[in-house]
Amino acid sequence: MRRSSATSPTGWRCSAVYDVLVAGAGPAGSALAWTLARAGLKTALLEARRHPRGKPCGESLNPGAAAALERLAGKRRFAEGGAAGPAQTFGHPLRGWLLHCGTASMEAEFPGGAAGFSCRRDQLDGWLLEQAELAGAEVLQEHRVRRAMRGDDGGCLVEGEAGGGTFRIRARYVAGADGIRSAVARSSGLGAPWGALRKIAITARMSGIEQLRDRVELHLNEGSTLGIAPLKGDAANVTLVLPAGSAWAEEGRNKSAAMLRELSRRPRLEGRCRHAVLEDEPLACGPFHQPIPQPASGRIVLVGDAAGYYDPLTGQGIYRALRSAELAAPLLLRALETGDERQLSVYGRLYRKEFAAAAALQRVIEFGAARPRLFEASIRILGRTPGAGSRLAAWIGDCGSVT
Image 1 (cartoon, one colour):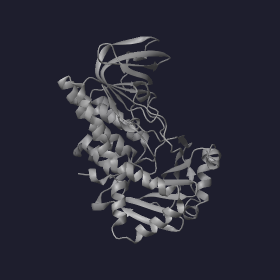
Image 2 (cartoon, helix red, strand yellow):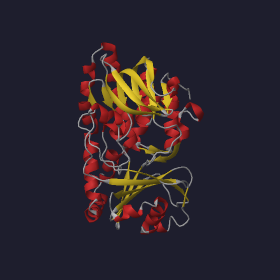
Image 3 (cartoon, rainbow, N blue to C red):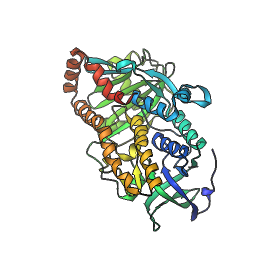
Image 4 (tube, rainbow, N blue to C red):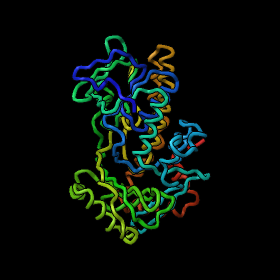
């Protein structure tokens, strides 16, 4: 990665003015920076930590996310292997979901042969970051953004910490891609109080899990939910979602013990996980519910989790990250071409329209997940209804965006 003089001592001030400064080098930020830099804009991409870095995530791309990544990279490059394309980041094809609750089960296959992929986030994030830099974005790692505000010159001023000191960078526009605790959202007035849904998630990679298929598994139980996404070989991403503040969440402070205990207490998994071992130390995150009433204001726009988050159950986070960047990029380009920041005013409407169905589905699933008996009955009914599984998988998989 290219190094920058922005690691200079305390009080360093950048004299250059970027067209767009993107805060956060996850999928949303890197995808946006890649698109803007490829279009010829002077783009800075700031990341608080240094890649590769751990990231609590279900590590799966649904068909909508896979299609968005293909549009971003181009079909030929998307299909290439090795260092030239993203194929090396994919662990396993994913063709649907398996839902389990109590004694009820349902298989939901993505329609029309659509498929997603599992992925190790450190590899996916690293590849996207590399593509943004190759396209011409200036990548500044270990640069933590603390504030983004309107500058005296009509542009934006971004302040933060790097290399034991501070920095100030000017840009004409700022994109916050810095997650659900977005400093860009808070400092620009786009943030909002935490929502009512309070959950935490513990995520780990495990090997030795038997009978993995090309399906994401969702196991609902009283007080917790367990998701399994197959990676390469017998490895899988295992994500345990718990109500924050519950007794089980308190036990979950010992993350490794909580993960193994949860596998052993589920009859459908106990036999399959007899030889399962943790590949690495589990990561925890949460709570998640961060409502954002308006994801853009003036010269500041929010993408990915920074633009709002509700619940991790449906595995749609990477799709929302890539698709929100895809929505924001042409509006930023148009605003810079015309000199009219009002071009960004339609972003909120486009964002809400794009994700309205997914947001409604998330709330329906959360309502059922909080009521296991109701969810179990619903799964039984859906399992007996012709085509219901495919329709549910299409919603969860964002298959409407697959072209």
